[in-house]
Image (cartoon, rainbow, N blue to C red; front, side, top):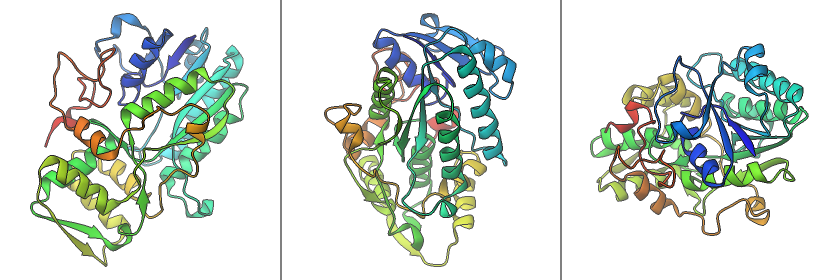
Length: 327
């Protein structure tokens, strides 16, 4: 197929493109700047500049493709929900007018709670799912929690907080009981590749690894793998808003992004069922959490990075943001 990947030089996009090329698909990669960021696979794709907030441009860029991998996520902007809504509506309209048959969206796991209790981050993801599903293309949303891999925003928050807080880690009390089911980035990319080819699967599928852990346990696994000795201390009176702001000050991730993600931690983020495995979308041997962290902490190598065709998607990539390579 001819597959258009939005945000092709982003964290997930830069790893999804090699996956699709390896499966024999032709790839149209989008970029937002004047010229696309250089990648090891730049000369193997067709580049098209796309501003998803420009309906006419979206209509032109989406033409002539069979499927779209939709990886547009806004978290760094104050009104990211409105931006995400407009972007999804523009791309949906462009796909319908161009007769695109398939769209795959990487979303977030939706906790089993009333919608009014969802964080703005998850509520926005759910809204985008519904917008894309309301078009003419067969739509599938892959819902993931924490994606473990070098350069992943969620993983980098964990890494930088663990490395920069000396000896003691303060854990808000409200985070101690919630459970998360992380997924290795290599597994997430595999799901995306399978999803593009399985036009018969629509709706949503939860994407998760084999381990369910609390957030303190997740931090402990990282510390163990990284060789850090950290003592966890409960913080019973630290509200969510302050915890997000503090984490934003301690990391290189934009504060607005950290606050948006932290607001989602009050609910369990686990797979609701094993539909992905039953449908054949998941890898035969899902990557355990500890192995995913070990691969994410592998040394950065510009000559053999995670954006290269055939390289490990969990490895650091020259396409990843510069702040993701800092300790």
